[in-house]
Image (cartoon, rainbow, N blue to C red; front, top):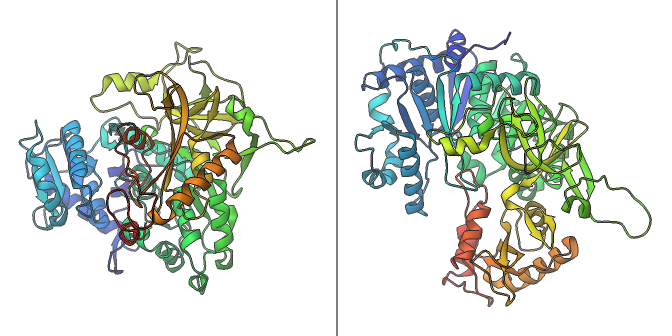
Length: 602
């Protein structure tokens, strides 16, 4: 029997007598606000009553566009307590790319059928015009958090959701397609929370404390540090995401200050800290309290974690804290965890064999050393969860054969909200088990070895040149290491090129590699030459073109992931930003200095 309450509402109510422990919210000005578990439960009940008083009914969707972490968590819980279905939407902090942002919000509101939008005065100023043109949501009402929902309401009527009820809609980040709403039930949340908090992290309520800067409108921040800890009775500290991006050291400072034991971040964050941290900032920093430094949400590069460990060794960071993991929104959050205490484990495979779909372990051998690709071990599936690797037809592959990763288990959701065609394509039975339960086909490429999962990349992103598979993430990481190019600011993709050397738009031609990397105009020529040489030396490929784009110009999702498919489409449309090859001015008239200001603290 599960040690957890059946729903998150039950879990929060079970904690409502605890007035000593709870959540700490760090504000943008550096001050902190503490809510005990008792206080969280009271606020949730109060906000639920306020929402019920507005005439909303059980199952109605409520869109949340709330940049403040404290207000977001309280409103999310309030919606659940009222029997409503919250729909988190990422907030926009500036008017940059505002039209695209408004279009994105309008799409999510329309697709979710939201009846109410909860927001703040600052966010509403950006949103108002976008809501006016959304067909089918004429009745949508924007509610200001500061003056309409918050207050001393009587306790809510106590609507109690069931495990099979929809808890919330998690719209995917849209890194490969238009965002779609994953239907997450209360049962999914309870199952996944038990999986990663008990079996993955082995949480100890008397000792553990989470520290997170992750966005709360995405699954790793919301489920990993709000939902899971509330089920598992673990206090947490929340930093504003934007503050971390500007000053990454604050993450470490809060771990030190609050004696955090569990934290998590994508690969890029560890690389950012390792690069940005100065020697003097290590003085007095003590990370010996940390027992889990998890990594997931994007392809994991071993070098980034090793650099972080080496940089933070003087602060007492133990590299055995690293926990690589694998998951996705369609499986609520996590599917596999590397065992605690092992640290970073990798599989060194022959690159040429990997290109043909086989993960052959690299061995010294005689003669010239063969190129090697290092792939991070993402661990084993949680109890009651299954992971397999299948070919294009849907037959399971043996170990060390690369194919699509498929998963099933109690954390796997039922599909996409009012998208039956997309759901049927992603959730289907295997060819060698037609009578079995459906599997989630993730679109990720990987292989199993010794029962452990190794993830190589996305099916749609593979670049196939002369019959050989090349993984964009490997190319991007290599190019990101050359001078004047930052890791995380490179995308690689394939396009068809005809016999005349022109990019083909009619589906004919041979696939060739395109590399786009951000840089300044004064560095553009050197970047192009160095990137081409790097790709030739490391991968035996000659790029059709290396494009240098202005700083902070490559398309990204709301969670900061580069949109490889979007960049490819911009390139095909002739709309990818380019810098000029002479010093001082870009192709859009932006000076080098303006580019550097645009890069800011990202």
